[in-house]
Length: 199
Image (cartoon, one colour):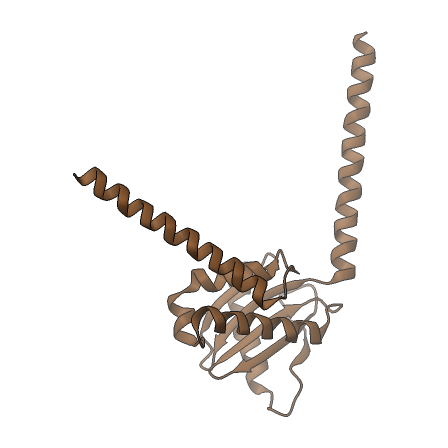
């Protein structure tokens, strides 16, 4: 009887291990076919990073080099040039495609895999900026500096793990407003509790 149970347990473990292995291969294939956003940066005209979001692991030193080199790449390009370019960084193993947009004093820069759609990412940056405009009523650099939590929340509604999840500005804005309302309710409830405990 115990040998039968042992055989069943080994068989179940093998099936779990096999299915996990297949899922890992499928995940790799999915990322390869769909492409992936490796990072999104918001850099001002003076080269200061106002927001950095990395979806792949890079050491802190690599992150700083990426910000500096991306800034150098995009500021060298003229207004008449297209908004995407191939970039090879000596400290990274894979080449990246850099896609950017320049709004007023800010550069929105995405580093993506070669299979990612350039026009899709340009549209994604536009969606991000439009959503920020709705959230902050004409977003500016100071909004990004003083409200990084809200900017990250908007970005997290759009991109999850380097994959695009939502591109509808209204849906993203509604999710952000719902979170803001819940935060306000929680804050109001905490103030009421504090008043009760003080008495």
